[in-house]
Image 1: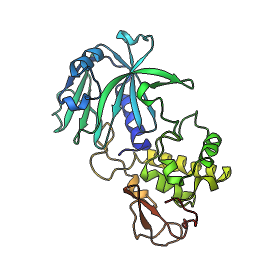
Image 2: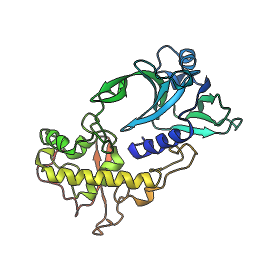
Image 3: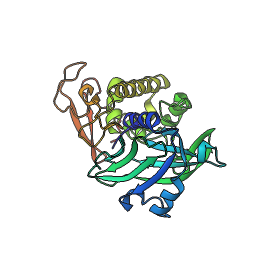
Length: 296
């Protein structure tokens, strides 16, 4: 699944190439791609035609396009096209007339006759749907996203408030990092990388973390995400790409994730892999020793 840096790379590409343009037509080529839009494909296409893509927004791993009325006029209440990338969803910008991708699901054409925006999804776990915008703590969010906590790159992110919430939990720190109601946007890859940077084991009880240690951890979260953004995100296969179809290369800089038995970049000890929530956690056994009171 793409994590915050990968979704942010896509958001920036859509903001550059599609925001401010008027949709002239929408072609839904596979109904599963719009299954979350209950009224159906024709309703989605009809309601998007003539609308302006006024902004590309993101919170955590969630991406949406805010919609203006004809000519970009603001609409009372506000509405957005929510984009679920799922495991293989891609938003691509392609010249008009370019050959269709094998797994093209939805095509957006624009009134200016310029490049199309295409939703491509090999596994069809992703999709598109319209949602009303609601205000949460002064931020406009699509209704399905209103329960998602701010992510570490947002201005509204409050690390001290999060530290207090973490200390009140009885769980391991990695489980807490993956809880999108506490903090959004962190998945398996960047949790492991940030924990390595902070020298914390994934099973360290949250109740034992001091406020300075939480700040250090989230300094690591922010740093690793910014590093990943500069590298275009992490791509392990051809399914995650930016809007130009290019893969990110942060996988070349991963310290522990997926590095089983390779030397730790800090101390040289072989990286360890543990089973974790039907996935894996990668740690350095020297830099990140398992605590005695671990939450497994």
